[in-house]
Length: 246
Image 1 (cartoon, one colour):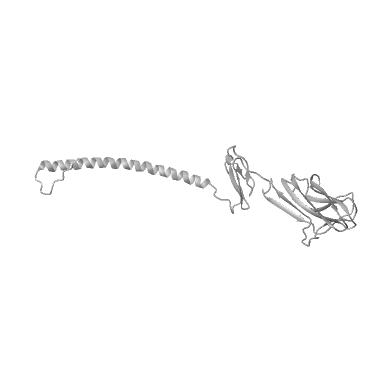
Image 2: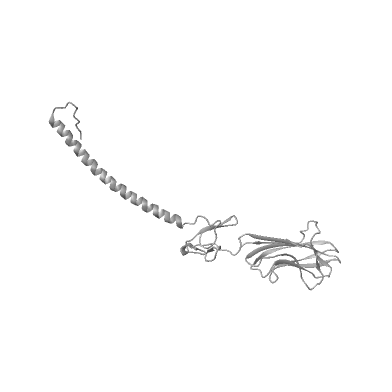
């Protein structure tokens, strides 16, 4: 539509009247548009307020970190995380589709399905060496050599060595890697002459050991046998190590 705007010296009354009518029509249209836009702004403002309230509620219920906090907290049972005892988090599988990750001593452990659980850190290792010679002075008995403690739960891979001799002459020495009940690995060596040394290496797996993992030896020839601790000068001649693998 073309709008007519009369000049200041316009004498034709029809043109002046028409320009006034057109101005009135435009004003009416603008008034309607303003009313509509005002209603839309009010509706959008209400929606923004509602969304802000919802976001605030979510933010208030979301725990970003428990670092430095103590006591118990409440969570949905669907999350699989609960705390009924102060400073203790319990993790269980909330659903078959649940997965997640958690952090222990700087090591991130993740699970693609379910919830990963363990009663000990996934990676644990212990090692120990004898600090004195062990006399094998009874041909009927085993004598305990290197031993590692705190290995009674989980699946362990153990490996060790003993250095043996017999000061009386040639002898046979039997060794076993065990937990005091179940033998993991065993072997026998011959000491060729008096005070010469032989080494026995043993290794294997064991689950839920009945006791401390150790290597025990028996001289089946004489009562002059020994497990040596420092024939090399390094004080590690008879050593056992164990790694928790599951």
